[in-house]
Length: 354
Image 1 (cartoon, rainbow, N blue to C red):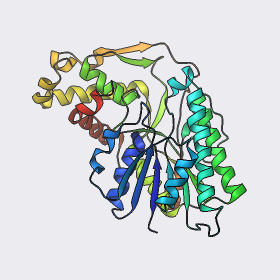
Image 2 (image 1 turned 120 degrees about the vertical axis):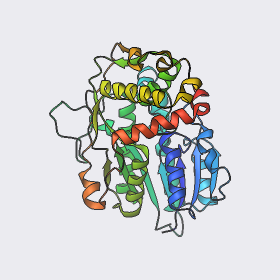
Image 3 (image 1 turned 45 degrees about the vertical axis):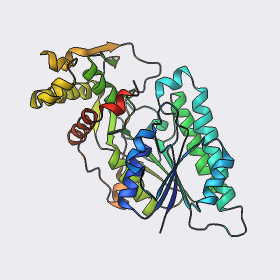
């Protein structure tokens, strides 16, 4: 199928990686990015695509149903890949309203636009797809010995962010069962990699080390997350678009559980190694502990835990593995090395955001 995609939130972390990945793999497809360029959206993340004639960027809000409809019609788009979301749990605790507006109302606006253009017309667009990108956080929290989340796990969101994503998941499902919209949903574990906004755990640790700023670790640091390299996530979405069954949900995970404190310690170790092996890095980042004869781990600072902090997330990705032979290509160590190298090489990108 020749796809013409509307990618919402395509200037955000996972979105920009997906757009770059998709156009590498499918160079003749059309990709239109719709992004409101809020704090987490960065047009510089799409710089590699500036000269690509198959790519178009539109600055706009997913809550603007009229705009979404006009893009779907004007560009004759047959696929929506919906990344756009407010996604930072801490921000959802202090300001939940934005999460309801973007994640619930915005998703519903897009669904209405897709229904209007693809279904409510004289000649419906039979071969269409609305793919909704969600999170493992909708399933709640796991104890240390609990089995990992399956697609059939009951929803039990614990933060305003997770609750807003759960609501959007249900709305997508409802538009399939009520109106016949061709939908798929994927729920992913924590992503990491290039273009990750510096407030998130992994890029925060890397950029703080480079600036000799404390590394804040919530509580005792023993909260557990399943980590997925962002390009592996993009491959998973590609498989769902190509082979996924309409109306189905697919968990995309990294099979890669780590305690937060162990991740922080690994980053500190790898950063120290990078400085030892390349003296140019030392001259570029003279503030970093490693440039001053100290260990990066000296910066680790335990801080008060956040309210409602989920203990453990883990994804059971056996469904996508069994059906599409999907497995992550990056181990955590290979992925984190690539990530550190990217931040060392792209100082201008992240410095503009902090």
